[in-house]
Structure formats: structure tokens, C-alpha cells
Amino acid sequence: MKQETLDWLMEEESPGARYLALRDLVRLPPDDPQLIKARTQAHTAGPIAEILDQMRPDGYWEQPGPGYLPKYRSTVWSLITLAQLGASISMDERVQTACGYILAHALTPQGQFSGSGAPGGTADCLQGNLCWSLLELGCPPERLQGAYEWMARSLTGEGVAPMGQKEAPLRYYAGKIGPNFACGANNKLPCAWGAVKVALAFSRWPQEMRTPLIQRAIQQTVDFFFSTNPVRADYPCGWAEKPSGNWWKFGFPVYYVTDLLQLAEALVGLGCGGDPRLRDTLDFIAAQMDADGRFSLQYDYAGKTWVDFGAKKQPNKWVTLRAWRVLENAAAG
Image (cartoon, rainbow, N blue to C red):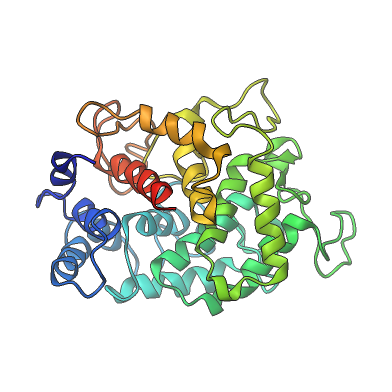
């Protein structure tokens, strides 16, 4: 990375981006005074503060309940955004309140994160997004053991009954229709967008808590992505003849729509940064860089979230952070 690119990311007028650059690219230790100052500023000014200021005292956004609707300002999406911004339970008690709220209202006793509050409202994209986000925000892994077990078991199929066996204690549903990322929203075929979210969540799960079941699920996830060249993204398409063009559009924030950056982030996080099968994807990512080492925003949710994150087709600090984090982590092995 050019020093000018890093200087741009660390400009004082962008406290959120500055914090993530110091944490993830400069890699300052957690107790470094400069990082502590930047982390504090990121939580008291900028997008993190703006989103938290919209939270209701009980810990939800927009309306009470499991928090999936309305998109994209309700509890689910606000927490996913906060996690991508680097918010932390340790920095603001409102983050802890929100994490507790979503666990109480969206996580079923069987381990499914649900958009409706019932087991049938689960999907891989929601499960993976919330598992990753809650860990990223600082939620203790012990609170998520059941969610990770369901995510792994529903992927491998171990101990999960078919959808029609309604008397079974653990079964598939119309959304989460079957193993290997099968999804009702993708015409019952494996959904690669959902798989990316699951892979990202697994990459964040502590090594010492990776049971044999979770290890098998991780291997199946890696095998799924490398069943083709990821840069082609020609994974099963339930309703179209070719993959969504959004695979090749880098955005921020990232919700259930997925791009190659997040796919690479998940695989690098699972230890595949040096795998030759990922090389084309990393090369594609690097090729999107402009002469100044910056990356443009190509996909966004402008006007739909609490905060807008820049103009489309213009160099964007958040996308640049995402891209450089992937490239440097891959290079570091």
C-alpha cells in the first residue's frame, strides 16, 4: 500500500475509517494510545455514533421484536452495520444492550437466528450475518454456541430431519430447506450468498471451540466455494441463467447481497489466503484498484440506512479498507 493511500484512510475528518485503518492495516496493538484515541473517537463521532443515537433504550431500532424488518434500519441491519464499522461492547453499553436484545428476540432455543422469532424464519444469510456480527461486536462466544451448532449441523445435515417431519425436534424449513446451503429463496438450490455469510462466521469462531462437527462444516464450506473458480462465481442460480452481477460490484455496507471481496475475506479468514485456487479472485480484487491505491463504491444502500457511506463510482474509504484488509491478510498467510 502506498503511504498516500494510508494517509487518506487515516484523515482526522473520518474517525471511523481512521480507527479501522489503524487497527487492521497499521495493526497497532489494542493498548496503543493512538489506537485507543481513534477507537474512542470512532464511537463518539461518525457512523457508529449516528446509528447508536437512533437506538431505542430497550436495545432495538425502528420496532420491537426479532428486528428483520423494516430493511435496512431495523435491529438486524443496524447491528450488522455496526459490526462492519468496528463498534464494540467494551466501548458503549448501548452495543451490549442491543446484542442482548437480539439474542432474546431473534435466537430460538434450537439455535436458529430467525427473522420472525420462530425456527421457520431462519436462513443461512441471516444466521451467518448475525453470528459474525455478534462476535465482532464483542458478544461472548459462549452465548452463541447453540447458534453455531445449528449452523454447522444444518450445513452437513447431521441430525436434522427433512422439512416434512414436523414432529422432529430439529428439522429443515421452507427457507432453510436442506443441507449444503440449500435455500428456498434460491429455488431450493445451494445459495452462495448465504454460504459466504456462514463462512465468514466460521472464520471468526475461536479455534479452541471448533468441535469436530464445526470442523466438518468448515471443510464442506471450503469445498463448496472451490468447486469452481470463485472469480467466476458460477454457483447455483435458482432463478437466472447466470450469476448476479453484484458479485463483481464492491459495496458498503454488505448485507445479504455478497461480493467477491467478502467471499475472499471469508476464505482468507479460514486459512485459504495462500491457496492457489484463490489467486484469480485476489488478482481480480487488486485489478479494481486505481492509480492511487483506492477502490470505488460500486454497490450501496443510499437512502435506506441510517448513514450514507459515499457516492457511487467514486473512491471510497470503506471499500478501500475492505479490499486492502483482504489483500494484506492473504499476503500475510
